[in-house]
Amino acid sequence: MPRSVEELKTTESRFARQGFPGAVSDLDGVQIPWNACPAVYAAANTGKEGYPTLGFLVFNGPNGEVQHIHGAELGVHIASSDVL
View 1 (tube, rainbow, N blue to C red):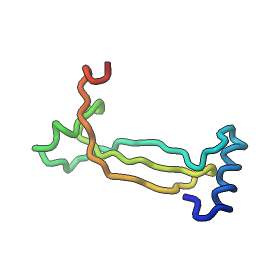
View 2: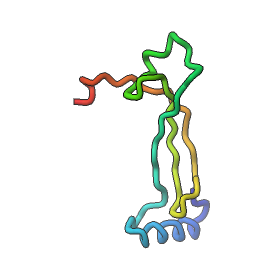
View 3: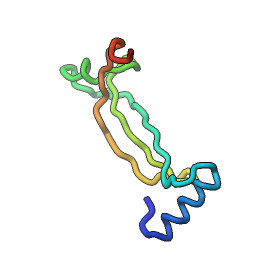
View 4: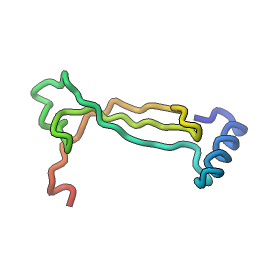
């Protein structure tokens, strides 16, 4: 993440040139298979993928550099009725 006002202005101006004024970071989430998930937790951490996962959020700068990785968060079971 930007560490000074000058870095903040530089990062924001790069995003603005790409059509995202005011942005200082891009965020995406990913679910990674949790192969060593204890059986007692498997059902609670199995979602649409069909197997237990750990979730990570990755924050990127305007040049694709990784600014921060948040995780691992346990996967979440989402029933089809919860989606509707």
